[in-house]
Length: 146
Image (cartoon, rainbow, N blue to C red):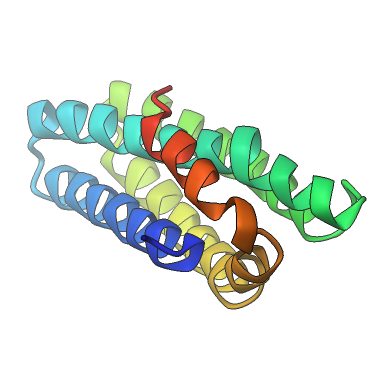
């Protein structure tokens, strides 16, 4: 059975690869590939965020008895990432290479800092606290599509 840590860390890497592919397409001036790359990245990223916000975070909050703390911080950062994804979409649609690449760089940095917190703190905590419910939770997580 997948641990929460293993599953969500692998999900992070998949989103990272999608964003790197998008960045490469834009740097190459291949706007058609950039359009496809953005759709794929946005889909995978939104699915990841939804898995956390609708399933993982509420499970952690139920066990901890609080919606404050790490999950609140992660939600705020998710909102900031969504705003940057919107900026990327707008700049990409305008075929503004410099702006698009700049916002991608900002998003990449934010994602990396965010992922470290989740991978080193939140996911190990979730694996400990949700041990008895992990099987059912992970089945729901894997089934979720945005």
